[in-house]
Length: 231
Image (cartoon, rainbow, N blue to C red; front, side, top):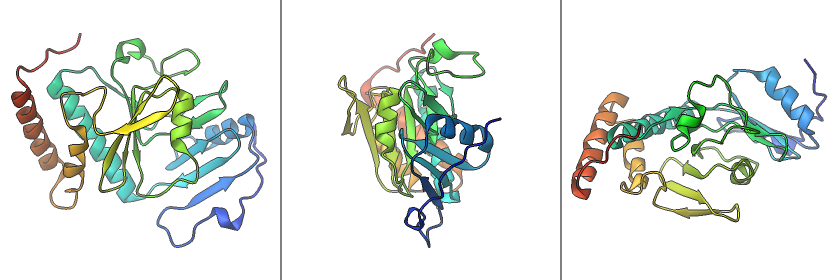
């Protein structure tokens, strides 16, 4: 395995006093980034690479809490709407041709689920990118993660800062436009997922999911007949 010889991060790249530690390395080549990603493996760290800088960030309990909870709510939504889904979690997404890479908090295949069904590994050089990614912004990244998502071709990104959920939809020019409606679930006001996520300290997750499921069924009832399951 190649060993990356990275320049040391400057003191300003590490923010003291935060529950999340962050290190940003300048002047990182693609081969350096890949060597570091392979070396860290399954450790509880997130890497992001913007073509020049490598960011390594630890993840707090609250960050993980929101990530898992929103992921569960999204999967529950697919169940109720009959949408096929493949949960890709925080798998590493990268492409050498655009020299970008990161690990989302959660990501999902929806429309393209059938194209990657049964695959153990995803290669974005030949496979489609996930249809949707979730970003938890309770700790601010030093890199422009939306720019990385755009280069990787992710159609939709949900960003949650602990209070508000925003939906970013990628346009034909490669830029994201923020709104309150998902292209994947147009019949549901998905920004209302934040209402349930904010209740994380009030009750257990199963109770939250049950409450959310009831809310989704109410929304479906208001819209009319429940849509059929996708094959």
